[in-house]
Length: 393
Image 1 (cartoon, helix red, strand yellow):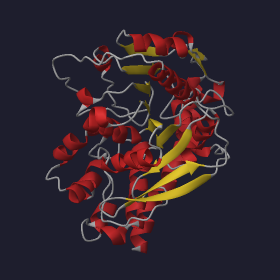
Image 2 (cartoon, helix red, strand yellow):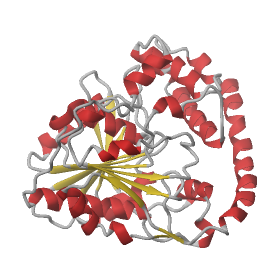
Image 3 (cartoon, helix red, strand yellow):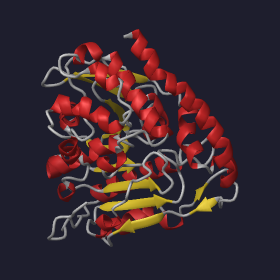
């Protein structure tokens, strides 16, 4: 097993060196790019949209980037290298119906300003993230009065895998139990959600599957993937595919003992494409006969017509992780509760203007959620009428 582990992670060091070399060359190109850019907005005219645009100043909200940060790879990699916020998390383990376990990390060292009504913000990191990786928005949200908690999926974020099952990208069943638990603990609380990268797939799947019974007031998706079949490839197509695959293999290796009866762990560790990994692991765990069935059942927009809450998407057009991520712009012409904020730059879950302040996307996220909560508490109604024809994504 140790020999397999060494073979699997040898390319990681090669990848790091290659990334540094490439970054030196691509940095020169970024010097010619403008410092300030405005977001491109896609939405359907409505009372809600007017309210959000005014409260968040989106028409004039500049994304002003310091010179060294104008490259998409720097935007993507730097958040992993910068110091995390000084946030203390209290971990709570939640036992699920099938005896699986997820971890909830609650912000505990920041005095939460009292709001008229308790407001909980659930943060869903990407599959490679954890509470530390989203500590900055957790800190900022707590200071604004949000009771903030990070959702860690099974086997991730340092949790023990107690069942032979990982949560697939589009399986919202665990998140459903988390929402029910929070509502049981705080019956009158308003719940909002913020998701990043692959975490957006879980959020969108949850909102689509449970519709008006999702018990969520508003949500934000930062750097979402709209189609997992476009994200997956038959071979490694870039440094980020390699990073993701190596991370998934690391998690698989850590929990190999719990999965051996269901998954051919040795075969999965030897795969060198995300598609093959999903076939070896998730298709086996969920009983999918083909990879196409897995993609169809986990498509984040498979039930988009049933999403009934205000939802903002923040995407970067230079996202190096989702290179083939085709944004469905037509979607935002039909749904008055959807808002797309597309940026010319920002990398993947980056959107850093400098090395000190909260990212541009995170500040917008908190402003947006405040605007949604104000809209809701003032008694406005949202016209959720959809186009008669079901959207095809």
